[in-house]
Image: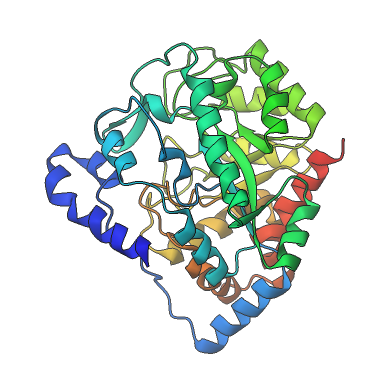
Length: 381
């Protein structure tokens, strides 16, 4: 498959960029992540059968990296990363192979301002006038074209997930990571909704007009007045408010301002390992208590090295917030050192949960049921 060739190309670039340091990983990715535990043929067959019975949804992903297509004015290694292109067809084929029903197909609102610093991303420049909105329009057009080409079925209502499954199609829920394209203007939320967007992550890697990021120095110290207005407009339209990447005061402000439950689509909690992208257990619990909010289990390779580690992380979240408040949030195709790096391995993840004693009904909640229930609640306006 083309993606295998592309991964070989990415690995081959390692010698050229290794001098840059840890940030080079984003361009020169290693070989596929190991499973880390034994799975029998019978266990794998049972996992595939479970996936056939129940819908599965990835609450946050960038399948095939659509956001890089046509991006301009990029910096350093981010420019090289984008030059390697997108590969949606390959990732969608992996979805089918692994039995995934649907996923968020996320644009990246601040992508054109990002640079690599150390092992992480951060904004290295300000937007030019009109640049954020133009970047959003470019990315959304690319994502919409996937449905036009017949690769996916658009998910605009929660019930569309069942319709996509019945049609044998992969469901695509359009989302935007970072509210930068709104430029603090809540009236743009309605345009995004009309474009098919059903969730917005308020902030990403730059403090914007809505609030502060978890990995940076606070600018506002709260959810701003514009952020409150955006959250309320999203509630009115039935859009899912995502507080991943938000510093605690911004996230708590969104929880308070929202009349609907919210999601942190791809995070983990501080525990055995701590990291600037992890959140406190108290914040995770506040999300869960807000009308049944959900936290997305995130398979970044921070303190873990294989799929077994992702199973551990998912179950740790279950321990913190309860099995009714955890979903998948893989950040597929744009994650840092992912230990779940292909949807083809979804049956192994399901088998790992079963090995650890999670009941079938609870596995069904974690892989899709909780997210579908959340989206249904949010859209019942």
